[in-house]
Image (tube, rainbow over all chains, first blue to last red; front, side, top):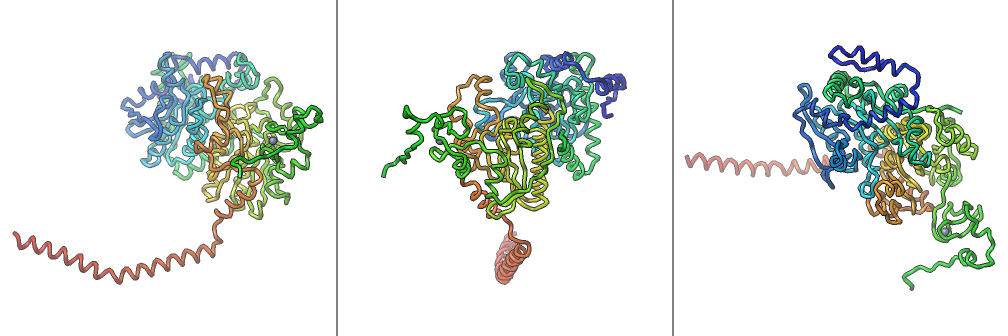
Length: 294
Length: 334
Ligand SMILES: [Zn+2]
């Protein structure tokens, strides 16, 4: 059982709640839709909300040094419990103007390449990396295609896989499609209690599989993309608790829970020799899948 | 000589005549060219690698046809052929996933990829060829696993890995486990890279979504077949999301070449020769030959170093002489 605890001592209750979710019967479709709404709640903390609480002296980097800067991805470095730490995350906007500026958290290749700039820095200066995943998917636009969206995602995955430093990926909201996985090839992949992780957004799936954009609820029920299921399937290594009612009710408390998990996990990963850590990361992703033999 | 090549298609002329037989323009016939409406016999199709002899349109090919074509009919040894799709989510959209799989299997293929070791024009390699006819060539757990095993066999046999992609992307019916196959394919390619073996990519129509956003983008050398759609998001999705009006050739191989995402657009009929040529270039000399080459280089280096050492004392003397004189000058000046 690898449900996270946190230092304040209230972990016991939360752990019991999450353990119940993980061990319990499969969730019915209504609850899955509720979880998706929570994962996308407009007041839910985004990367910059966590960063402000975890690393007040955060220094953000901008630009991919080739074509531009992508506000849908924030990346930077800061002091975290007395040591440097790097964070990359997809940033959604909170109000209409901000949402447009952040492109609804849908990254372009420039964003992934900015992330890779930071990964290269992490590798060279031996700084651990945390990614905060929250996106409906990579941006489907003509310019994004021409600037190499597919290749940027593939190379971001490859670079994360090869990093010589500890890496933790946290799905903090909705993790959809390759646009999420581009930041998800880490030593530990964890999900917040009400986060979702899926191959595609329910809306995208309903348009493609049901040929009806209004069938998102059906699609969500079919994908069952909630944290407890992802833990069962081995996609998530742990589930980090949220404040009662969801992370949006208290950004401070949500950040404290995440802090407790991150601190312990980064130290745990730092204790593993580099070569072993890298081999385990390879094996982790090599194993995932479900097939039968004829 | 005319600047434009003139090609006359008898089929086309016949197709336009009122008395033309209906077989020449049968809609939905997979031996009718959708571009120029020429119709071919099955043996003509196979002989011409499923390329329209009139206009060069590349018809879809199954994975088996691909392997037969590349191996020149000499046969191939399948890797992971026993693996079949499971239904981890017990997924139902308009039809249960298990029924979709059964229907696809009933048509003869076992999955959307076939991996095999074979020889292309005498050069041993491992090829992982995708099959769009099997559930849109979608990448589920079996595709990921067969691809990974293909890379591992390539490492074990110390030969290059080649992949021919034709896929709509991740297999949605396997949910987030299908998504993870993207990462698995990346792990496989890293094993190949650590073994110092090349990965050659051929992008066939269509290569989109999660396949393009994972291994298909990471070829050491990347070819594309003419007219192949290569995209992360397809034109329809982009037009719906952004209301952009896209040009007719959006995402096609020739345009992707112009944008720098493809090394060459290669006619399918040239693929065996081109791939074998690449493997010939990339092949390392045998170990003892490599050693003798290295020692030869080392010997050249030693001789050069010895010659330099002979010349060195005079250079050093000259340099020392200068520094002595300058320091002497300082002394005399104080
Ligand atoms: Zn034709």
